[in-house]
Length: 141
Image (cartoon, rainbow, N blue to C red; front, top):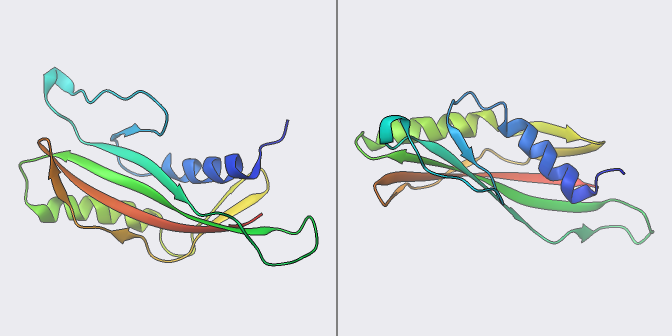
């Protein structure tokens, strides 16, 4: 059975996430994740999320590709205790991994990053500094 377009888009994005040069645990959508650290100490991790927009049909003919867009959300979740610039630098390395024009493929579907990812303002949440990175993407399928 071939992958559906939505599944192919997700698996293309996931394949790029898997190559991030950070050795942090990942909290994947729909999967159980326990925040645990070595010796009971809190450890940094990445929370992965996604937002999609309804497909847009540009051509009247049946079977023509639709424009599909969305945002991949990769949120750095790091224990407090360092200067904000440290967290911002880590988040910037995530953004750099998905720089403008990066293409990801799965099962014949190509997903492209449409502009440089946005490192959003960080905030404190239950003893962690949380910095969302929004990666905008587009696909015609």
